[in-house]
Every structure is written in C-alpha cells, then in structure tokens.
Amino acid sequence: MKLKDVEIIVMNDEEYGEHLNKLFERVKESEISESEPHKIVARTTEDIGKILTHERIRLLHTIRENKPESISELARILDRKESNVHNDITFLEGIGLLEIKKGKNHVKKVPVVDYDALHITVPLTA
Image: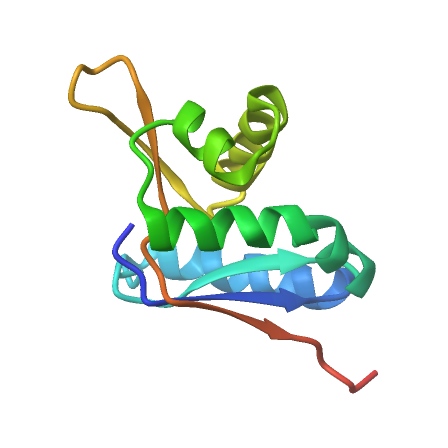
C-alpha cells in the first residue's frame, strides 16, 4: 500500500452502479494502475461517521505516528482493550484504510498506515 492520500466518497445507488461499471471496464482493459488514488465508497453521509469514529481516527493517527510493532503495543499506547483494537484493525484493514504486515518473528501482526491524509467527498448535487 504505497499511497499518499485516501478518498472516501459518498455515492447513491445509481452513481455507485456507474462507478462499478466503469471500474470493471477499466479492469477488463487493463487500465488500472497502483499509482491511482485509493477510493472508499460510502453509501450515505451517516456511513462516514460509522467508518471514521473518534477511536478509529485516533488509532490511524497513532499507527502513522508511533509505528507500533504489534497490535498489543498499539493497544497499550491507546490505553484500550486489545480485543477492541483488534476489531477496529480488522475492520479498517477490510476496507483498505490500513495494512497488516508480519513482524520480525513472523508471529506478530504489525499495523501500517502508509498515507498522509483522508479526503472526504460529499457531493451536494442531486
């Protein structure tokens, strides 16, 4: 995950369908490159609040700044239960907001945030 910025964009059902059609066409034509900005699609503005809770933003920031060597270390830094941190890590990894790498001993899971900013796009048109 070599990204500098990630965009979260709100799309209604119709826009989302068009987005997927264009994406599938670009994949079919081999027009997708890894240097493109990473986009996460939310269906409503309320979904953004569910994705980016205060604790998840704090978690992303802490990973980016402190570079913890394990989820256990991250939980200690955040002063949170490890199980709760693990749940947030699993969710954020699943939607592409962080990456898990293997630690030095190949047992520890090392969370990585390799981008500088989240950009949220909320269209104001109908």
